[in-house]
Amino acid sequence: MNQISAVWGLGGPLLLLVLAIGRLLPRAIEAHAFEFSWIHWLAFIAILLFMAYSEGYKGFQVSYSPRVAARARYLLSHSTPTRAVLAPLFCMGFFHAPRRRRITAALLVAMIVAFIVILQRVPQPWRGIVDAGVVLGLAWGVVATAILGVKALTAESFEHDPEVPFEAGSER
Image (cartoon, rainbow, N blue to C red):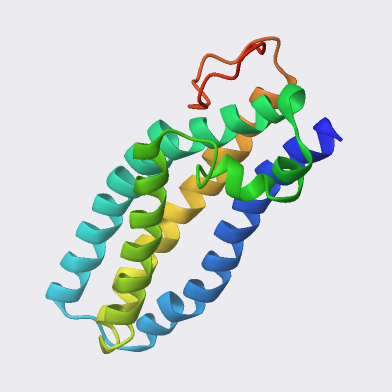
């Protein structure tokens, strides 16, 4: 059960990222049906660079992906029936995590939903330009999470903290 929980815990967030890419990519491609002026190209390049760094590198590679991978590894030896069923939510930090992590996870979801609602009102090609940046960041996240996840589940050691509260009688 532990191995299935760990794989499910890692696969769930990866599936969410891939589904998000699948929804956004057509809009990003659609933007290129419009004729870009220099301001569109400038915005396109700036948003790609910004999203690659802020979402891809800082958000995923440095923060989110190592934690998801570490929590998936934690499930290899600390799975429970609840954690097994809800492994993706566990790995994303929605429960059995420090209060600050749970609040951050909930606020991040709320912020993403708000951005989605706002961005739906933005006309093309601007919406597609922003979506292209988001797709780049999400794709970076998929790669970072997959690589770190495989490493976490197969390596002898994994140095990232799973951020789980101490349990009496158990080791991390």
